[in-house]
Amino acid sequence: MLTHWFLAAVHLLAFALGFWAVLVRGTNFQRLAKGAGDARSVLIADNFWGISALILLVTGGMRAFGGYEKGTDYYLQQPLFHLKMTLLVLILLLEVAPMVTLIKWRVALARGATIDAGRAKLFARISHFQALLVLLMVVAATGMARGVTLG
Image 1 (cartoon, rainbow, N blue to C red):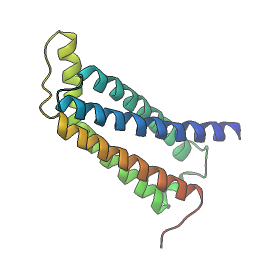
Image 2: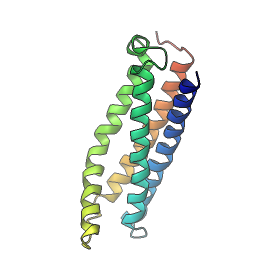
Image 3: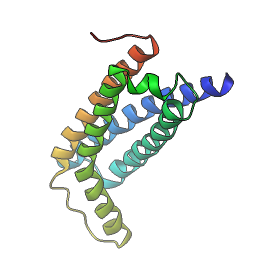
Image 4: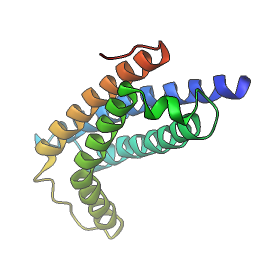
């Protein structure tokens, strides 16, 4: 029972961390686009975003498919779970371009080179949209926890 509670708490806290991190990353991208920020602040927020994603994937996988919660059959038959996974896929697809760019930034900064911040404004919008999707995932998760069914 304590393991179930611990996994649920860590999973929920990772949502909070992820929401904060992607929101801050987007804000830092905005500042950079305006010439008022720096790449390192974007990268620090991105580190937290990545850590939260890893925690969410591990704890979520354990809860849904590791026998720690209601069981795989429950989740696979739950429309809100499918919504939550669709939102996750959308977040991951949106993450491809910022992730590739930020990897290039990390390499460039390690070499002492300059970065190309030309798409910072676009990445700010993407990050803020991802924050909204994270919130929607929490809404879907709370519905699942309460046994809400659609239809």
